[in-house]
Image 1 (spheres, rainbow, N blue to C red):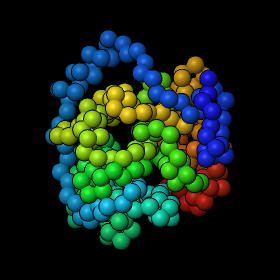
Image 2: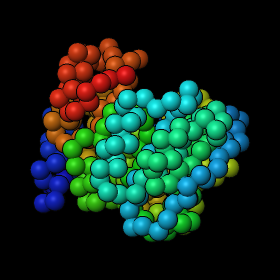
Image 3: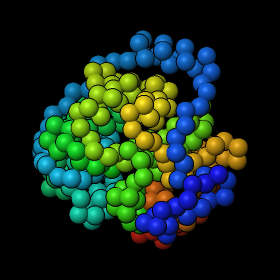
Image 4: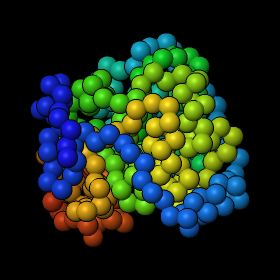
Length: 296
């Protein structure tokens, strides 16, 4: 059963048929095979975390936005530029962790368009960037509330700050799924009161000294584990949850319905490797309607 929607969120978190709204996380059962697989990967497939360097440090503020950009070519795409503009329009300080082959490949525009900037190497996927960014926040802006997102999504659209400022849980996902196990989808989430204690508590999912270099390892050992690990120390939930009875991944199966309901993101993979899930032209038309004049 859906939880009642708070007054602040009533008009931006609307129902989607087949999904739960304002879902509080509960851990689900995990198969013995999955537990063994996760244990094996955690110890035998991890690598040292990527090199990084702080270019522009974080400063004290009560709210930050953290964006991870993957730029193997050293060039910012149209959609990444749109995301930076939208985050800057909120008036909230922006920390970008950018992955390039070398520090000198970091685009000059990022030095101008960010309040804080960190370079990291190409390895490690988004969770290594999240860890580095949260370390910087916990050291220089302890207690700050944080929006965390990567560049696998278009957006944010709509009033993202309303959703972050009124996040009901200590760790709030925008969407969550019961696929494999109950978990917050890690393309974007909000975290309250980031400090070194919280970061230490999340270390099982956000590794302090290691990272993974395949998407399967990141999903199994980090994304699927994040909500479960966090729930031992803070409240966890999501705005829309798929319990698996109607849909699997809600970001792929009901993306336009979620946009209509107030979700501020759309997966880029719907125009790429996951385009079989939706009508590509319908997705393109919606992006244009949302102000994405060009799509790369």
